[in-house]
Length: 283
Image (cartoon, rainbow, N blue to C red):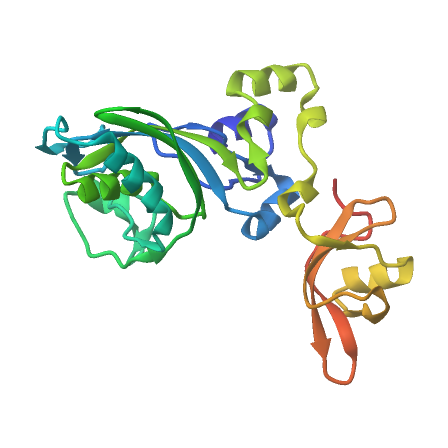
């Protein structure tokens, strides 16, 4: 998608806010130009709608993989299935699947998996903020989950199958939200191409600040803004800020940079530049 959008927009510098599995659909936020410098600071919370197929396990933890086992689900009680699905919210860590983009000794796990290798993976912390069942029609259960970045829904399906004693794998996956970006606001590739051809693409791009919309903002005077953009820390004691991250805006409201506020010994509360875009800012 990055390559395709690069071709459409003619923008060389493009980054994404989280890959999607080949079988998945949904929102995939892309950052263009200077916005790529803020990707690491964006919220990576995700929301998905997934269908788990119970009674089957595969080597990839989804229906595209090699079938490893099958089991009957006729004996399963729907009440128990609901209980186990909702119980996934208590998970605090997860072993990532071999079919993932996580690197082990410089190699992506999915590359090792394609080569027929299976390596030990350490559990990683995750957070399931919310999970609810949308449809239960055994052997399938469709649920919505809001979770931290780095949570693998396919592994939630595997975990659910293990807890029920019949196995399970991911059948369908749709990402409905990534950070502050929702599926209903997204463009299809065809829509993006049409807008570019009509010269209307700029009107549909979201402001760079949307990547860090939850941050506090600070608009210094012209002198302080110049010093900040030259890499100097500036005094923010009078602004009453507590320590933490802040977006620094130009008088026109454009993003001039981001900084971190900290108490400096003998100097009071200071705003230290971390990434600077210039006194004219970027939109």
